Image: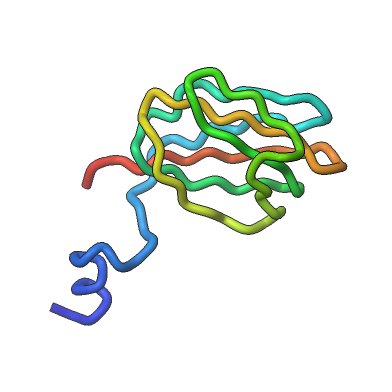
Length: 101
């Protein structure tokens, strides 16, 4: 077994098997995604934004900051929605669920 395979087996690499990506508009008001459908998701925004997870989330500028063009991985419940609001400019948020290998 090579080094990278061993790290993956131990859960030390931030890798996922990507499911179907959802694209969501991010603007000056909070927007919600459909349920993420996984317990780990990768988020990538084209603009600086603020995000929050939950059953009925509403994002505002006090929520977690997600910088533009920086993919982040989050643990959540499959039934969670993601809400996002732009920090200044409008853009898109890409939500990619991890699927079973």
